Amino acid sequence: MLRRLLPRALVIAFALAAGPAGALAQAPVAEAVPQSREAVRQTFAPIVRLAAPAVVNVYADRLVAQRPMSPFFDDPFFRRFFGAPNQPGRERVQQALGSGVIIDPSGIVITNFHVIEEADEVHVTLSDRREYEADILLKDEQTDLAVLKIRNPVGPLPFLTLADSDLLEVGDMVLAIGNPFGVGQTVTSGIVSAVARTNIGISDYQFFIQTDAAINPGNSGGALVDVDGRLVGINTAIFSRTGGSIGIGFAIPANMVRVIAATAATGEPVRRPWLGADFQPVTGEIASAVGLDRPRGALVASIFANGPAETMGLRPGDIVTEVDGIPIDDPTSINYRLATKGVGADATFSVWRDRRDLDFSVTLAVAPESPPRDELQIGGRSPFAGATVLNLSPAVAEELRYPGKPSGVIVAGIAPGSPAARVGFQPGDVILTVNGETIDDTAELGDLARRTGTPVWRISLDRGGRILQTTLGG
Figure 1 (cartoon, rainbow, N blue to C red):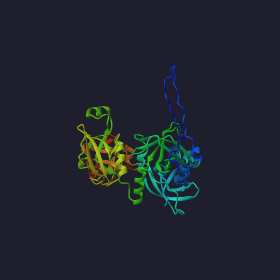
Figure 2 (figure 1 turned 180 degrees about the vertical axis):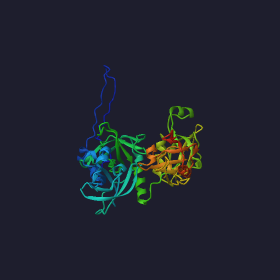
Figure 3 (figure 1 turned 120 degrees about the horizontal axis):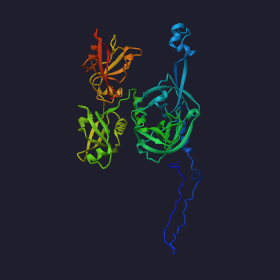
Figure 4 (figure 1 turned 90 degrees about the horizontal axis):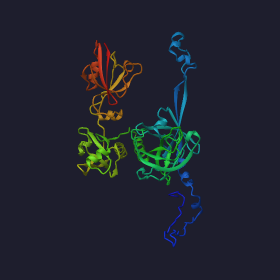
């Protein structure tokens, strides 16, 4: 198999010497002559024959309510005088199309979470037009990955081997295989434009391979393969002003795929390592102040008491420069490195402190649920009626993607049409005080909400780092 499919280079040597008139003399050109027909053709066909059969089309079906025949039936004024139509509610099937990759001959398929997010049924079609129903084994919104299992496949299925995506380098040649715009399986080629792209805004674990291989809508969940035909990434998103490819595509690295697939095999939910520390980027000013040669690493901003970071000896002000010998560029890089190692693994942190390098080791653990979440659905007539609230803990903060200090009471859900919805509470709000009383847990909030005869409700809450205050009633 061809390992590098770049055109054969010409070997040219220039000998520069001054002639009698000062002219430059050029040495003869030595050209490497192709020794075989395969060397002349320089084709990707062997890689495509190996990889393409393992890339499938994913059809995600869901039932949605059929809108009334006339838009007037949605108008409250019309319904008030003429009543709701007596026709029974109808449903129709809405279908989303994406791609997927078989990574095991038993029929394990990796695709994107956003492809099958709301699916009631999932079907996959192989490149040879065989069609199967598939079960959803795992959906993980934070990584934008999902794992499917083909039902009752006939015989072993073609599959791709996962590569070590950490070995990818900028300039490596890759192929993107998927079903863009639903036109059918398509192969495009390009190079790795960048590795470890962060701050893209696609998922919580932002650490993407960037490629200029053409990726378009419908490619989501498809394969990014190397010149050995191994899976190096799952195509996920593009940057585009037109909706089509402009040569900036992003893929989730195979090392993250490996972790999610292994979790799906256990039947357990995704459990992510928790360090118990908050980080911030290292700016040029910070690097200069602490004696770093350049801005790099991630600055420890705060430490959670009795968490793994404190236990292993990290302090606020430390700068994590490497994890297991791999350089760290920003806080997102740390999250990715820990997530791909998994719970229970050991990790070594290289830290810049007091103008010298130190090493610390830690065993990665899950975020603790302390205090217990004590879920409470608030009823009655208070402004909180219809809200579901939880005690904030590191585990709940991670589950709800709350970035602040994990303490207090957080709103996890709001019932439609409830008093809490009408007031304007939102999931993610942290209730700080009610009528001057600090809210430490759900029991306290429940007691306050049950008090009758409260004429005025003065409420303060934290919404995305902003402190909001409101007064209701009176």
